[in-house]
Length: 49
Image (cartoon, rainbow, N blue to C red; front, side, top):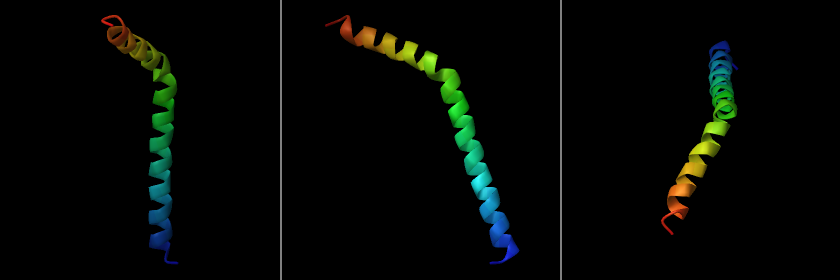
């Protein structure tokens, strides 16, 4: 396997890993906001009924 291929594979997996990590951190930070948002949306759906 050429070194360029290995390097490309490593950098790709690193960027994917970084994206997943960023997503996971923002998810952990945002879960309360998400729950509040869901509660508000559910409130708007349920109240008119």
